[in-house]
Length: 588
Image (tube, rainbow, N blue to C red; front, side):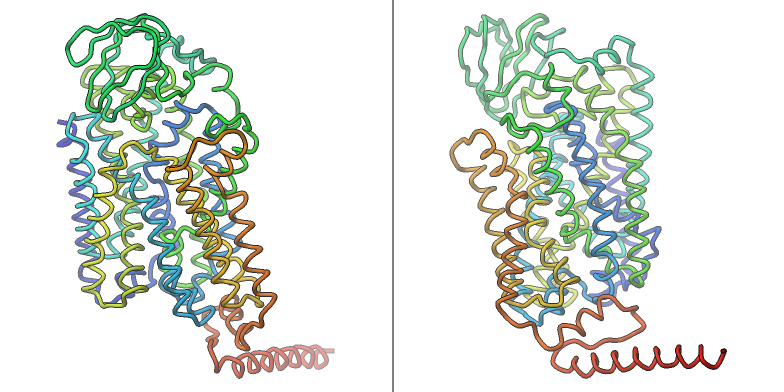
């Protein structure tokens, strides 16, 4: 019922809009950057639709349910990153004439090797960002319709691959712009309805929450993965249809097990996590991994999100679709306003979810809190309808973000690593989507917000230093750029690997390993600057810089012949100055 009402129309409309781009797609440029003819308003809507991923539509509210009010720093970081991008990156990236970030790296430093390294970085960022989109698609569809987890994952992957193969960037642009406004409406209207429907008691507890220690009603929890529950007192439960008395102590709950807790039963601790609510939940800072250093955790998150936004390859590719640098800058400015409207509402879903569906933290399904709320307020047709609307908005979020990510990953494979034509790009689209589907099927245990934040961390540690220094520092050398990108990649990826597979860590060390941006970003910047200062930039470096900062109607060559272009530019400037002075003397 929910699939037919909510998911199927979104997927169908996505495919139909994708057909719009077929006639306009003739070359690689058409496929990757829509022939650079996208207007600022349409582009900003597409950027916003692409940027508002599962982590925004569902993940922020789920993090508020689980970790507290401090999780609202996530949308602050998401939006503030665009201000930095507006000032430092947007227009110069468009003026570079590149189609992708690796394309920019080679154009700036004339190095095919750096281009290949940048393409590998894109694959890492794309994997970390794409897997939670498909994972959450499976979780949401499973939560609202009872289908197996893999169904939603495969539907999301198939919809994205077919749409991109049909129409490339042109199709993605129209789909993402449409889905942004769809998500905006489907997020705001149910939020207003929920606030109007809940009673004053719920609103009071949402503002002044208490610790979630006992179930207020019979609650059924579906554990899709195995967990360890620590029971503090004898608790009668029903496990897969059989009555069981849980004695105090740890209990292993197998995967795909349904446990029903009666009203008044104590809430167990799962995987050693603290119970929800209480004083810490209301703290306006984010205590990552419950390490006891909330200020450090908040700063670590903000550094990752703000600087990582400047390095997200699927967002940067959007600026290449603008007609010129001015249009790229206008696109970034409009995007800040559109994102700000959307991010007014995740907090509402989060605080209501903390009161109405706190039990979702037991099975790690807090990402589905948004779509679970309407049924808690109205179990009739109206509640079902709003559940369908939110599910449609969630799938729009998955598809819009995944379109841009799969496009940039396929471009890295078939344009930067293994250059090919339009046919190779289409094959890479299906290959990338299939790979991510397989990864998402085994990533059900991982938190969507954590994975997306790691994608930002890798982007902040690699592409942010490369782009900022490549655009604004003429002394950047190939050796400096290469070592800086590798240092940032190895540092951030190594910290993520330790978090996933290493021993448990505690205190501030746990924060800086789980969220390493505060030290990997300075490491990458300092490495790049230090190595560059020991070498000599190429003679045409100044000309390459001029190309990034002059208007597009002033062609500037780069490479070995660019020195003559630089001398010509300087001569033109001197001539212009002489004409201005002569004109003033004549007027006098």
